[in-house]
Image 1 (tube, one colour):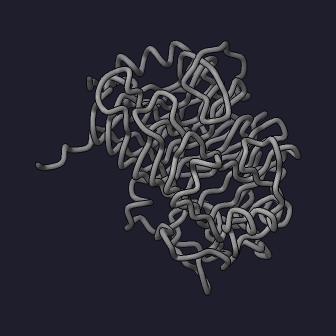
Image 2: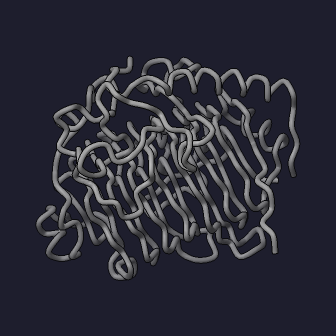
Image 3: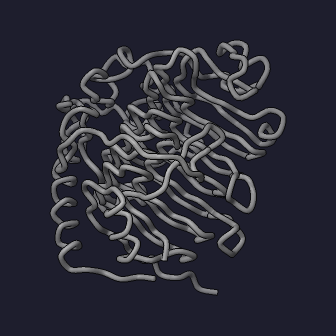
Length: 390
């Protein structure tokens, strides 16, 4: 059977909230739809729910090159939801090249996967997250989030956040390579892996981490050495922090500095052929760890590979400053609900950008999207060595 053509949902939603949720729901209506493409959007300040929501058993979604910030719950929520019909599984998803920050005030994750299987999460920058960074689990899904690849992401959790990588509810077969998993909460850490139940097929290595892991939901903590001994993972991973890794951590420039310990310390296994800026990998002796490859002043964006085609979401700002083309502080508030546990809690209802129902398009909104895309593309061409304002 031939594959369905990709359906593009390209809408700029700025200020989001319940109105943004309703607007995009009626605009796209793509629930139970396979092969949806969501790219080059800005979704922000949802007061009750998520930045982008993909649900209801649709397979092969691509969510790439979006700027997602200040949403009360998840940045990106993929929710299989077997109660709505179908198998309750989202399979074959690609989530890449997104800049996601200052989400999760009421719970959720930067990238949330409920019943997501056989999917790839790569080249995403997630920072100032107030819940978890990347969560793979099952609540509404028809099965656990099995056999997913998490590679070359940069994840930084805020001081009131949860876990950088959170794997729960019997979700097996996760592969985590070349990620930066930093956590500013001294009581949480890099990886929360459910045990027993999630260890089968789990492989994690060549990551930059903090010295804190857990196998029991955070009831007890393991150092990296203890994690290596008990979980038998991360033999080549090491502990570092933002001051050593990045050009300017305090101004949210998360490109690697010229002295970053993450340079040339990654593995080719599952590594994307280019980075978040579109620069080819590797530069130098080996793949770098994180969403950005260090290339000094000689950065030449490549648009030839699948992971960088179509431009991308450019410079992200601090949570208190202006976002790329958007302006404003991060959203907060929101009341309780469901669908955001990610193994680690959350709650809400109403979103910045929903994919859930039958395709449509409005010229005014599409024109606004093109303007936002042009701005994001222009900002994305800056060399990684150029500091970005916060």
